[in-house]
Length: 139
Image: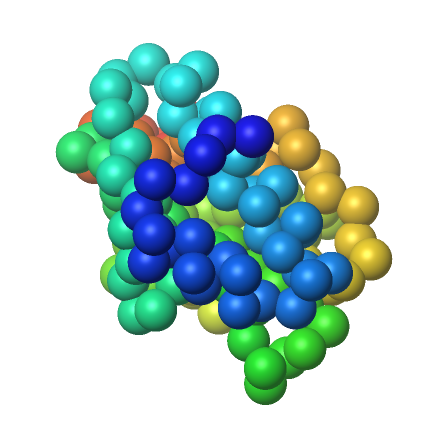
């Protein structure tokens, strides 16, 4: 597990319920691992946006992860709602994930994660600015 260098981000992870910390840290590591395996992604900035851990690249669209008190048995991977990311993911992976509008992939507490498919979604977001004109984002 990559160490969280940003102390503000680390503090947010510590505020999540213990049973969701592990799940959210798994998503974090999946984002970082996917970034390191994705051509065109040289650097990922880990910061806070809207109070949630966020991952930004020069070639992509921001990814956020989080858990909310209003839906205590769920956690999510959030994408920029002004992109076609979630719309495309829904078309390609409608049988794999639960979606919230045009902004998130939602996971219930006990869901199995389709890792390969999720990595493709993450990669598409991290390289969105170079993929957005490719049909179905190249998925």
